[in-house]
Image (cartoon, rainbow, N blue to C red; front, side, top):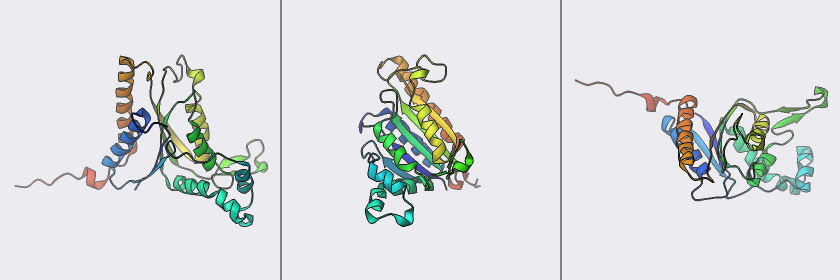
Length: 226
């Protein structure tokens, strides 16, 4: 059984392209694997708290030495990391805001990328002291962008600070395999936008078919009778 962590980051609750694409992806996965376990986290509607000085002090205090107040400061972080640890597949639906990720999604990353919980730190490793603790996860990023040409070789590749940032952070989530699908041209609203939506939906459906294990119930053929 696959455990899926589904995260939506759009501030829009209605008419959100990234929410629609991520919900389609998860629904398609559940059709192939009905027993898949889905944990849903809407950081767009309920943003995690930003990292504070008290949070930093608590995170860098040994767990057995933390005060009750420090444990309370880390409570949200602990809950989010627990969800992440259980997940085999992380599905993130997110818009691009000002060429990067929404503040709510950045806050989620800041809460879950934490020393001694999702990564270890050891200066004995030389210039690369950080290593992820988690491993073997798949990440699917389903995004919506107002302009276009953000992919490799595109006219706005250098302005894409969403996908590279997520890809960099993904290493510390234990991600071993990453996939990204984007809807573009949203601000133009022309036939290119309509085509981009259709292409993204088709690509997401194809990706589900490649990644999701088909359950016995979904693949069982009816027996012929005379």
